[in-house]
Image (cartoon, rainbow, N blue to C red; front, side, top):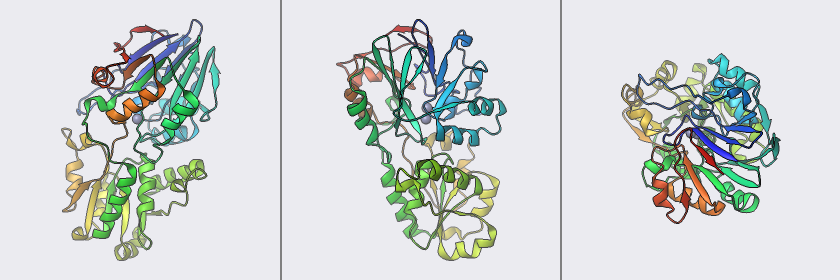
Length: 386
Ligand SMILES: [Zn+2]
Ligand SMILES: [Zn+2]
């Protein structure tokens, strides 16, 4: 088997990994590059001989993993989680070309192996800020490769991944792991459960709690909805309500976190009740929500910032002005990516002969993190013999 990281050996996002045998080529993710500057233009992803790719596996539906699927040949099969596909189709509505590619995707089931040519693929559901995220066990030519995708061990589903690696994956020859945290702070990440309790505390202090959060951070949003005490509202708009209904449809049977989400769609006809009883409202930075926030007494209001810090501090960001709509705002957020110590935990559980970091702008830091292991730092496009 050969491994080629077409992009992502030295950057976060925009990733594409190829694993191939003599007869089969499989890609994992085809992402759009992430950039914070206003004038940033993402580079197109260039994969040699795309007409000979046999299939593309999608770890999850974040743009830095699916945004360049349009570079594929029209008939190349795409494989992804069923829920991930439905959410992606909602979020890329304005990109007809990408939506067309995604609508043709075949859906796999967690834990169920399938073949693409002579490569066996087993997807396993893991914990990340996109619900329905996967790692892949890839087996061919007598070798076993674990590709982690983006993951963390501090969400509500944090226990799954270590258990799956121990019980179902076992030792692998190679792990291709995300390494986002290698260049970020060494602080121990706050858990999603802790964020829930913090939200509840804010609701005790403020009548009107607005939470600025990506509409697709659905595990967070489900957690917040469950933190709302009896008598208060959990409010969102119709778009968000639709996404939450998809969660209930796909995941409702798995956990109480994902079912009976008590949501009320915002309508000005209910304004009096909202004022009287108080609420937690999911908001996004647009003119409609700016108007809504101004309807309520600012002295009794708080905005909770529930997104990555970089979006707020980047040049030209409108978020500081949005947060300034009320006198008080606070951060209520945790990363979608594993801390360095959790990266190490996952690597040790899979006990690979070789480690290749991707999705990191400081891959060399992995060598210091596990000095006793063989860590290979590739360059984009380089061929590595597994
Ligand atoms: Zn990513
Ligand atoms: Zn991601």
